[in-house]
Image 1: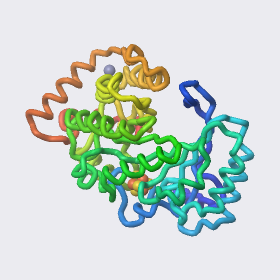
Image 2: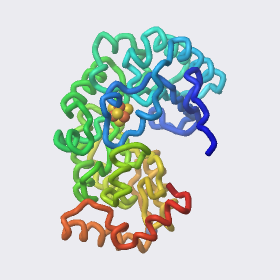
Image 3: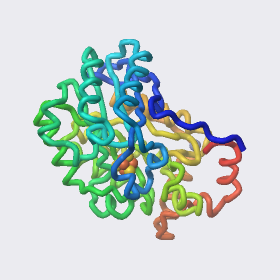
Length: 338
Ligand code: SF4
Ligand SMILES: [Zn+2]
């Protein structure tokens, strides 16, 4: 077997271009994934679905981070929106020291919008006054249910912690994007949809945008272990569409979803034939907020309804597809769909 290439701490993990919105206008965006010393919470075990523990390094210096910024600048083509992710918290000084943060803000001061993510414990007034007003801070609330946050996700903070952080960010004139997970471990499709709807209504009180992330099975996680054992399944795309439908018109925040691993066995998926169309519909809706853009049809919608009913009767959140057609599920892996 070929040995794995060593990842350099002075190189970005990834950098790509995509579209996003600025004040309702579709704009070019650059996404920068930085290599840092990693999420403090991941080091103590981390969230059940998060594979970032394996993505983090341990000895990333300030010099390394500055070289990563140089690399980001060399890729930058004037996109008005730049997003910085660190596989952790941008506001954690152990990942991004204040001096590096300041440099990023200075270098990208011409952007209309800049976005980064943080756990709520790093969101303080002392830090917020140092952040430019074009910034959006993303909060990984995941669920507004304290028990789900604790037992299914092992998030290490409470919904109230996120609310406090969100309100404080708003008071400092900055925007909030809240991430919610659809179908964390141990929840059926039906319970997962209800949870995400409730969570979005909770987040709406302090969020400008709500982004729904369907469970994506990442390597080296508890979620992967249960998934391999047939005890977890990423949600159907129909469930995601249903959640967006239920929320449309009922929240002030912009609703969006850009699923990782969509259409694969590890990510949100339907029957395989309609996945592309269904995911396109979600993307169109994320930009337009027009519920009509969620219109898409396929015969497997009946299978989804039956699946929900079967989960209810059997009282289980295990992967029923796997139980009934093991060859099909394993075939996905052979096909390279995971
Ligand atoms: S999901 Fe976020 S908070 Fe949880 S372990 Fe991963 S990076 Fe850390
Ligand atoms: Zn289908």
